[in-house]
Length: 262
Image (cartoon, rainbow, N blue to C red):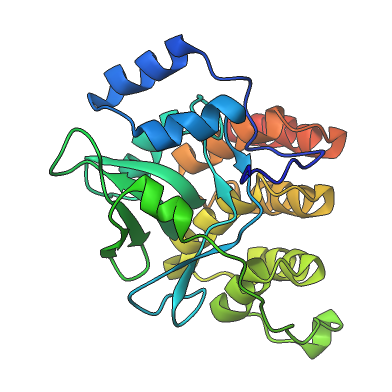
């Protein structure tokens, strides 16, 4: 039974895996990738999965007993594990990790810090700086994936009736509350504090690849509004993502932002 969700539109589904892709990744990271990982990539090179959770030995922002995982990255430059060096530098994470799921504030990764093969799987929380093991191997990781039902959150109301915070924003993201996400991004872009800009940058990066067109358009508009406040490297990364978007509106903002910072 495949783990892949086989969605009609899936930004994490990359072109079919080639042997040259495997060699490129293993040479880049100087490791041997797990056979069980390569086996599922030969069926589909990354993408959304039919599960959304994995047990955790510690509470996380997703749950008291699990971590969120609803996609696994394949081997590729965009939306694949070859983006790891960029995010390692951007978020000042330790060398030796290969990111396979997550975005910005939290990640799931192969932990090659003490080995070159058969790595354990770790969870990285960039908000707290914690890194802890959730599985002994990728095979064990796959075996323990499951679907966790989430309680429905109260829907967002009119703009003047709600109070937007980091917590409510993350709650909307974790519950994939489309209206809540869009409202949070729109209002946060106008009210975000200087000390929260790095956190909000991670939110924008995470949501810039969301499957919903309206969410991505909202992210592009927020980036345009904050272009002078966000770190230049983050803005350039977002422009790169927007330029590849299938939405004409998002690509329009990519051009507008480029002109604004040039």
